[in-house]
Image (tube, one colour):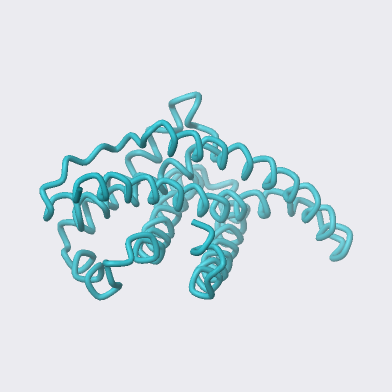
Length: 215
């Protein structure tokens, strides 16, 4: 996985995700404030539009990272899958439904857990339709014990780093620009960004299933 993290392509993808995450988080917070006293619009923004936008960003992130994990798959091949309307709508519906469902589950309701899990589901859907089904591979959504250990470690590590950054960066922004409330924005951005290592670890676990299938 370190060869991926050190590549220029990964740096470019990370910068793009950071930029889009920043724009999305800022837009959601600004719209939430503007619609604060319009109950129906605020509810739709909080429970439909913003979660749906985050799901679309997750799908883009999974699309960009997938060929880096599975080097035999090119972006042009993956694009053919995304051009299938039925697949695209099914993937969008599954991820959006899961994002709503997680809000009712105590363990998964926190974005620290929910966002990486959604990222892994998105990657798993791509693996299922791009590789597992065409190769008639017995695909398991649950990673091996080793891969699961790496994923849990990364979730914990990224959570600690994200929490530290949330405090430090928001304090700097508040003092530098004489504003308040930047922590919510920074937190939303970090939740989207710090799922990338978890998704890579889950994808590497899927490569083991593929390797065992070819043996």
